Length: 351
Image 1 (cartoon, rainbow, N blue to C red):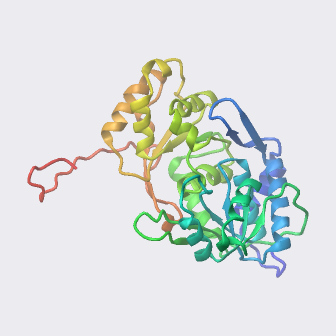
Image 2 (cartoon, one colour):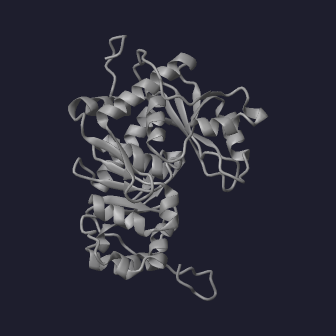
């Protein structure tokens, strides 16, 4: 109940606090630093403590509704910082961290467009930012010792974060996502994907993209099931790492864009997966790009000896403008492949 006596609905932060009380020692997130064996983890209790400390630190330098840019490499620090912003009533702005030999144009546009006043990042990245005259007025937070303050009650209509579009056709645009938008979309994904507390995820997707952030980081917290995260680079270098992690942790859900399945078809050899058990993989979601039925056929054939079932494929599509999920299917329904012919194409090729 709020200070005014009005009953308020729980936000994602309330869900985190409840899990920290009810199942404090359950692991919420694991992160495979090397994509294979070197792992760090956070229980619900440890995560809630870190989130609360970050939120308290933010309240010392930010007003409610201020924008905070998150610039972290993939890892648990990013997860805690994002949730810390939500907890403090500060609007999170996920962004790709600076990369060598890459232009800062996108970052500078994002900071200006969002009206950001603070950046949460690592000491190393903060040192890079300090070299840019355009960011001299941006307050940097890169501390491990945070603090303790009373945290605000959050309303579903309040802005939770800004999800920027890719900028592939125009300058990136920030989509305003409220706490209510987020919870509604998480509930829809939970229902369609058939998730439960018995689910288990393995995710290599970038946490700055809405598919990785909402589907890979926030959905497990909402659903109360553990997730193993790994750096996207580790997957790109060797796609077999993804499949090994799914088998090792008994993941029931994982996925990515079509190119992820194509990478496995191109680079993974049958002898590399011969000993893997992928029989528990129930939801292999595929979105963000056009889905190639031929690639799915080849992927299923490659992994059929490992217990992978073609019925696990879950075609879906999302948009930052819609928080995330726009189209998909119910988990228990089979996917359907249709070949359409374009009447305007002279050669009548299948599309």
